[in-house]
Image (cartoon, rainbow, N blue to C red; front, side):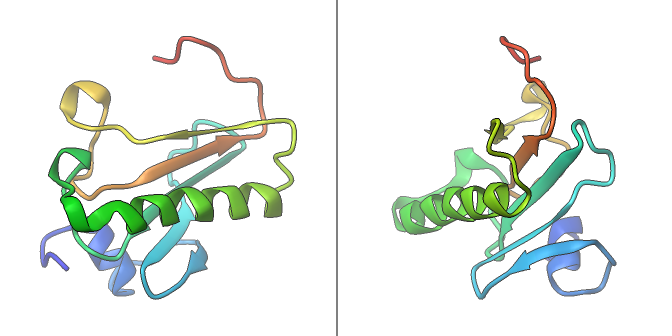
Length: 114
């Protein structure tokens, strides 16, 4: 945990959020500025600033983030399709320096994104 990290504070229940999933390693909550009818953020409890900062021990956690995304997509009835995104760095739109996966669905997605 990082004392000055917004998402770490959400994980510690110091800042309220609409939680949709929690387990010992991962938590997920609704984005406060949704870009789709379903827009969830799925985060590891371990503080990692970005995908650039993962290390050799993080493979299971990264896979777990995707597994949780698939589970939540099923629960949210996103069988028509959904998108998972990890923004890395300022130019990619990362605004909180805590690794997180966006789960977006409930509307048609365009390609290329951004």
